[in-house]
Length: 278
Length: 310
Image 1 (cartoon, each protein chain N blue to C red):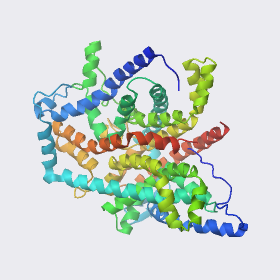
Image 2 (image 1 turned 135 degrees about the vertical axis):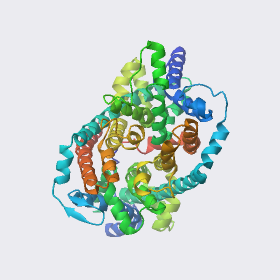
Image 3 (image 1 turned 90 degrees about the horizontal axis):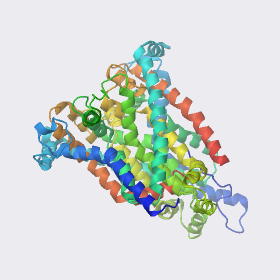
């Protein structure tokens, strides 16, 4: 990397800290302070430390409102995220693996379909029409399948570049040892994909958990809302109590924040070997 | 996009095996049915609706009954000023956000790849906005950019003693304000991709340049800029696709308003869907399909060629 003298390191670092504080820390601090204020103070929209610090009370109120709907929404969102990301990883890695290892006449078609999946915006109403005929419209399994279908292309592209870097000699050694195709893939190759799987899990979880558009179209109705939909509907309900609105934002951001902190180091590693390498 | 090179050698190298047998071996080792689970979901819920959209876009449609009406939906789309404006807004939004993410992402990544103090902290903080949902970001910035009481305009008044603009309420700048929020939210991902791209550049280049006495700027201009092209093409492709299809942030900040000033095709699709004009909504989908494909396909072909040249 570019070498730097010690004063330069400090100078640029301090400038960076100042810059990120204004542009990134202040908005986050704003969310936090708003979430801890009482209703009157929050309605002034100022960036200040709350005079009555009542973060916990606000969070409890948010959870209690509308018959604990946020808890149901959390359960829905977790099921949605875990199920769809798991299926994406399993299905996507199987496709990427065969696509890389086996040259068949299907390859050009599969490549075209994968690229199409990345580029083409999903056709909304026809998707609803198909889901209705399958009986999965307005159901959580239906939305899970939709997220899988929409996220598969990115997963395949990211994983394929990584699988290409795994030497085939490993496959051959396993075959000589008598492994069948299923054992070869799931017990030998799949564990080697760890770093790219972590990257895919993080990126797709953020996408699915924070998704607003697809639940809005394919899982309408308050019975089985996701956390993003409950937050959006909460805007009209709590227009006068900004403290609760921001407490809601804070609460539904924490799961992704924790996931990022846990996987922080491995994300860059996975991207270096997977998505970005030409 | 990155284009992995598949090697041409046969799948097995076992000795004393005729080539025919090894082809059978490949078939057995890498079975084609591995495609099936993903393909079923993908074909049913993505490809089928996409193909049918080309029929339903030409109909008046109630989900139960579709009447063929030729190009009427498209004519309507291009006659109404609100709808044609959404096409222009889509392009403006897509290109400004994508360009800003490339430039800022590259700059941030170069700084965050250098050995500066607090590097890990700075990398994390830049990525934080990516973790917040579009709904959360939308609400936060609606409040921050409030024309009368918002923090941003309070700061502007404090420094200049003049009133700040109505970021999201002035039709002339509402779209660009949302685009700026989008950049704020998305630049962390672009930066991460660039950091990975810069990390993949072999260190020998920097060492050689250092021996030759190159300045930091020369290293950036002659090593980082050309050799991080794969990252650039990834960032451009992903952010342009995301920008042209963007819905979440626009809907949660302005809902296409004031008037139609920040409407994009994706929000028009939703409005028509809400109003029950399913045929018109699907026509919007087809138009969006054509716009995105007409821009991304040649662009990614061109960038792939450049990548192989490098």
